[in-house]
Image 1 (cartoon, rainbow, N blue to C red):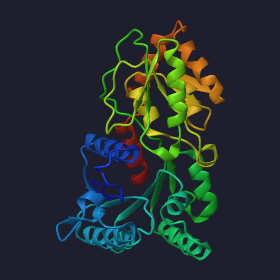
Image 2: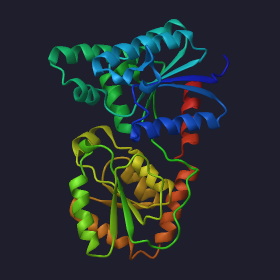
Image 3: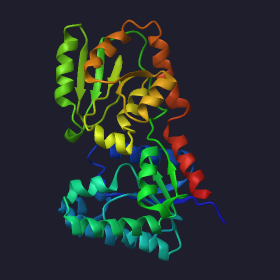
Image 4: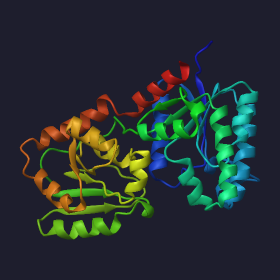
Length: 333
């Protein structure tokens, strides 16, 4: 069988709204292109009805239009691989791909159940229907990509027939970023794009305390982070139940490391292991420890080595080209 060389990537993400999802998609696309493969993105802002982007409609209408119009695109596409980033009720493009004999890849960056609850807050009957639809989607898919080991275990437990289909492929950073300059700038960065993840109030409190030590914490909620000579990058996540159950692979963590910025991270699955084993930052176990961990960076004799390890970890391992190569190897297996 010929190796697939063309991918149609379908997602319900609006690429005009810059966040972790758009960074992930842009990174994966860049990785695929670096392998000299063709990839076409079909996102909410790139699907039109009567010259109007479907992201201008309400959520319910978006779901219907995404299903119908993406299915038509699949039927007419020459791509061998239909790569779908999970979206609630996105069934028709999978059916169309199956009919056309294309390879179907389903990607899940989090819990499908959580996404549906956030969108619809469904009653018991609707949850049963959704569970059936999800089973159908998992059954149709040839390959499934998730970002954490916990997600893999969760889906294999819920959908036993998916065992053997699932690969864990972590989020990544860009290996093309410019490393921070050596020396302390007395500045840290906290990237925050979504209120529901929490942390804004905590970041403001930490910022006030750090000012007493002559250190500035910049709280970044602008559209795109382009790096800088920051001494550390901070992660503050309050929803511990979710990340403990499903794992934790935040884009912003790898964004920090991409610039050689050591990360101060909570003791959550996945990133704590990466941080400690590779010595690219510090792990805190309670919020009370955050200030102390940050201050200890300024006393560390090996700070520049830590910064270098952070940068090199993205260059050598956690970058989008490696991510795309790993996924395509799995798809072709």
